[in-house]
Length: 311
Image 1 (tube, rainbow, N blue to C red):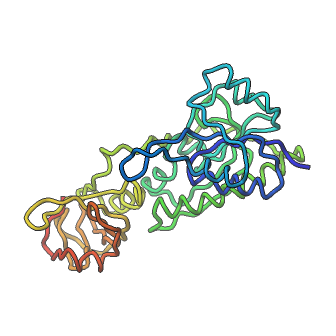
Image 2: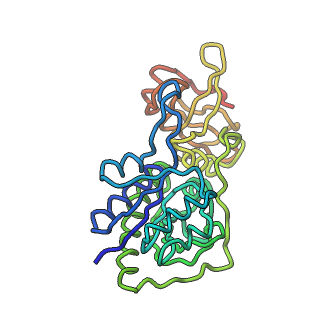
Image 3: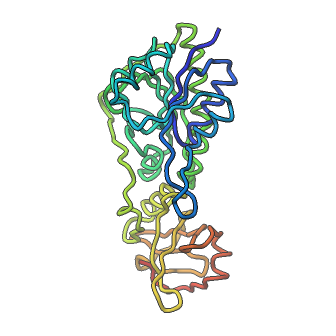
């Protein structure tokens, strides 16, 4: 047996789940993804989403509505007579007509341990908060923001130097396996649902560019978590004078260092920077227009000695 599934997703994070559901023998009757967006070097070419591209390679029908306000879109969705909708990082608000438009409703793969970190940026917020674990949850969707009952949980440890990019890639694979497992249980009528607890609710607000500048006047642990939570995108950054003018430098990796000094002061020649208490050592950096470089390679092209001030 197999399920008739409508899959809804957009970024690379969603692709392994789509592929695993196909490999498991389910019938993907439709793939919904966000419309092509301007991209390319000049931003003039329309770029199909990673899910759109993957679906076409798999020979699956793709639909890209801007929203579901048009009754015709809702009717088309219902006309597939799908058993279930699978949603992974789709990026569009789903009205109740869509949530209830399949036999068994819609199930979402969410990258946190709900109810902690509901919302748009759970991976980044978990690291920025210093969480030591997170996970993927399969949740039956309802009208509220990530408030639905939980069907299945797979926990993942967050290493002390793990970046958001590394955690993203780990959860991407874990989430695919979790959803495939959930669909097997659903097919067997053995997928129990547990309501989320009322305590411990936190919201993972979308990352704002205004919060990406590094504040070395914070504790070293907070600075370290800030850096790795924003790596590789959008990237935490500081300014330093290079060649007589201030330049912005992104930091894509760091580690804690056992040093003390004035906040923002470069303490050693291997990029240990003082914070309000303790220090961080910068391990991977990128100048504007340049490539990401390990600290040693960065310093060969941009010598920064002890005593340099970063802001």
